[in-house]
Image (tube, rainbow, N blue to C red; front, side):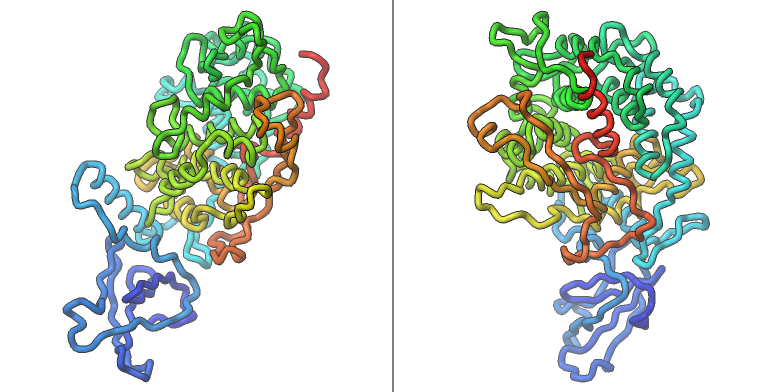
Length: 531
């Protein structure tokens, strides 16, 4: 029998109680008619695949007398829905359902720490692995050094490697300023005279790689980084990407999607670029539109029947595009006004909530897809913006609870399933996969979002600006002020399953880098006269 003081993890079912410790579990059953709690039946059950056999009231093994579970208060508890496979399952067997079954079983194994190896991170008092901060930082530092020849195919993604590694290191509390000189030199080699940054020297400018370079320079900070950006050429190039329907192409003559809307809005706002549109822009008319004209309406058309956001109108909803849409709208105006105005928020909340799976605890990016650690950011970081959109005092709607998703479930998934526990370090998609800088950055970003709460403390402009139909992004708009604080798990009836030493740094809910670095680069360019 496991004592009440033992370090154990517990799940309580309606018809059963399972006390879990290491590789076996003890069921303690009390006959329903017994008045003495000592009249019990103990049974040791090995934990194998995450499925637990038990004596139910309706099972054949309970014909002698019915059972009722003992009510106990163990030291450590796991919410029931993260301890077993879903009770309602599709009976149609497909490749997708088999992959989902396999993934969930692997996650259960990691959540219950059944295959602990020597060298794995130690467990905290909640039975959750510690964040292996040093090993992950070492992995990111190494990824900023010359890479082997097998990475040649990733050459156009070099700006992203810079962003992922630098942002991941900052989230871990590492000093990234020693990289300033190398970063500036690399960024200059990627910049084109026509504006924007390519994936490398001589490569065409692309909005995604331009975003990655600009944000990488912002992460490191300092005048040398800021002055490496040719803002005049960049503004001219953005004007060439602006389309008559309000959106942005990713490159001149390239695809137009909601990524362009977000990347352009971030670059314009963080570098304080003029909103005026160049007369030779494809979107120019005699009405003198701006870079922001029609952008919110373009994002609005990307919401699907499911409630999520697609890359383009009429496509499939995806977690990454949802974040891009919400981030863009939150730049154009305060999210408590722009998001409810342009999106169906109840549908969006329903779709986002459906992205979190049990028992895994992580998020998927699309309907009927597997959980993936990167969506800890792409979906997880949607929630601060959605929650801010619901903080409207004028409509009489009660404020939502402080959390619209299971933070504990996501944190367990990240710490139990996403850490590469080999010497390699870093974070990964899911159990069985290798770590990489992309997942390391975005898993840490999602961990930060789950550990903290963000709230608006200023309400810029006026409600009438948006309600009267003033174009979002008008020059008289100033961005809202965001405040971060540790999430109060106890106030929500939840449990903080990580130690304070495993808390990572915060990221701005819109710009996804340090809020301090966002303020610094914006202040620098606001004080600058002209380009």
